[in-house]
Length: 174
Image (tube, rainbow, N blue to C red; front, side, top):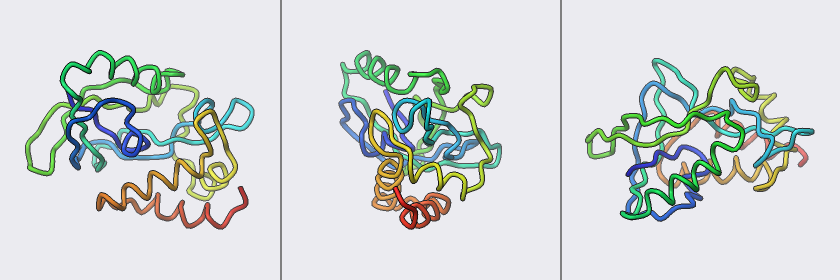
């Protein structure tokens, strides 16, 4: 079983992993397009979290995790509890291209653009202002941004929007 991580799963998968490798998902892009009312914000002061937003010409580089054999059911339970907390994500099995060039099917969580928490198209400055101050059950929104960007850089994965957001949020009061 493969799981595709593009945000916090990269640095905090929360399930037993026997292998991880950089992978690419075509037709989607990583975006702060989901309002967070649980993990990185609250209903009163929503944060933003990353989601896979459909983009016909887009690509998202992330990590394909191979789940430890025998832990598939536990992994699904844990991921569903974490990712489907508000039903803004949809669970999809999508083709990812591994660094080796091999194409595999991986579990991925993508945004439902019809859900009330969807906020695709927010200008980067608006995203920065929200991320700088929001906090939720799993910590501050700024720490989520910084950790994700740091781990992407360590993997050699570039993301210009995240790099811009890191620089801008670092300038803003928390």
